[in-house]
Length: 193
Image 1 (cartoon, rainbow, N blue to C red):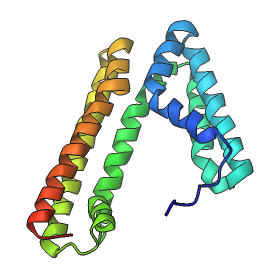
Image 2 (image 1 turned 180 degrees about the vertical axis):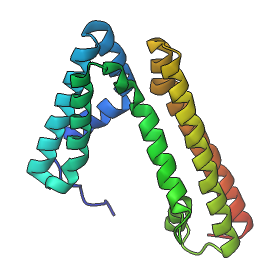
Image 3 (image 1 turned 90 degrees about the vertical axis):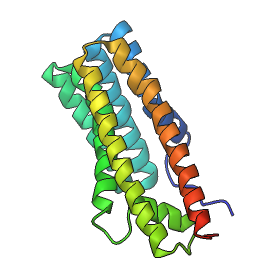
Image 4 (image 1 turned 180 degrees about the horizontal axis):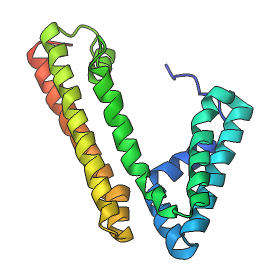
């Protein structure tokens, strides 16, 4: 069964999905060819436009995240400190770490929720294992945040772009794939179908 399509402005998902995925490259090219201030203003306008598109097609609640990001970028542009746009990968990693971390204080952690969606009959020891995997993801996102922050402190736009636009994606993919394979093997030992 195909899940229902989420409401939103036609064609905006792919455009903005690509912008998020290639954000470091867009910042690198923008800083190089347009200048830091112009790039920040352009990014603010793009995110505000996405907010308007989502608001018109899906309502205000769904569009708030784009308005907030657009407004934050506009404030960065107005501050004259356009280099602050380099902190977005740090904020994303810290946010993901917070989601995984706070889920440890709920009855079902993020990884437990994902595992239960795939295997509804996981025994308690399997769920305990999934909670430990959630803690591992917290550690991963902490390390990724620190690495992204280090690239900013290195004062090299090339290094920042290389890590945040390429290497961090590879590391997330490797960690996810490794964690998924180990979790499947671990759960199969418990005879979870």
